Image (cartoon, rainbow, N blue to C red):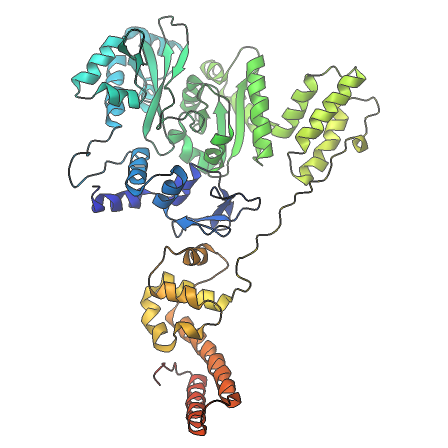
Length: 553
């Protein structure tokens, strides 16, 4: 069993936006973040994540909870499994009451990484290669570059450190050849580049051969820790600069990133041998940076840039593309001292939408009317993925770029989107903001509960008696209360004086309503009616004098 104090220590490290944002794409919405709910189908985002409350809640289906609950629901895990999953992601060592599982599974990759680093310092061939590429010794240390030796040496090291090969297989460090019936190291005679998750946990390696292996670069295989479609190389090192500069530069390779960091472009990252995918978007969305795609100008590089630009523009990202022609890449330019030129290039990228349209145009023979028609159709189909304002703006650009043969913007016809998203409707037919404010106040400031209970009971609330009762019972994980806590329109009262003033106003109206009911009542005796009238009149008189009357007065 996982020790409770260990669970509490892990919870203290978790950030709800970071946890949920690693699974789905969140967008800033005031003080909160919103997204379409991952637990039910919807078009209008009703899923809210509150960084202040460290909870999530869906106003559509009612689900809600903390970081652990989200992982449980999303990954379909039980409570201990979700705790262990988060601990692995955050490189946190759990303790167990039976002391059987104290050693984290990731320790094998950390130990091997340290060994790879020590081997690099003794391998002159690998060091010479890095020096020739222009990489400083300080960068070797900063980026944790190492060297992986022959397969059997790695296998022997792992077993000598008291790790099992199955543990190494789970971390993607070792594979198994069923034909030969033997294990082998994934990285053989390669310079290694450690790959970390966004929170800094070591999850895999990239490897560059220096002995002529068929594959110049290899990455760790897909594991439950390593998903290259969600990761960006060096994001853990670059994220502070990204948040500060509000800009991220995405390159194609490890060396590009390292060389750019050496000369001050410390907001550079790289995809891991794969195209940019929708799974990268939650990570890119953090900090809302301008995104600059820095890709090679060859056919493969331009195709990758086109795909990424389509994705990013449709997702509403701001930024553009820089294409390096002439066989040069960012690392080459840094090595040749063209830092100022690089700065100017990054400062003026071609906007995503213009890049997509220009690339589409380049694929057709525009002297052929049929080809021009096909090009327009493809361009219009792309524009439909954008917002109405951008569609209108760029249909003129598309028409002008199609040539001077009478192509008018009026010919670029974009059918209006018939699926405009309605405003989210609340489940309750009526929401009394005063009652909700009172409930939020006692949720956020439980020291006021006794004061409230002296003068109010749940049945006195007209619309939200159930939520009030749940709050008094301390059931903060109830979906109704989570909805209140994450709703920025509901404001908690800030002071005891403000609460007292609001309670007096409410109670005056409440007892005036009760007084009217008594006056109209026909099913009680004259004596009972007279007693109740006097009681309510006395309460109202005292309240109007500023005295907060209790239930027993």
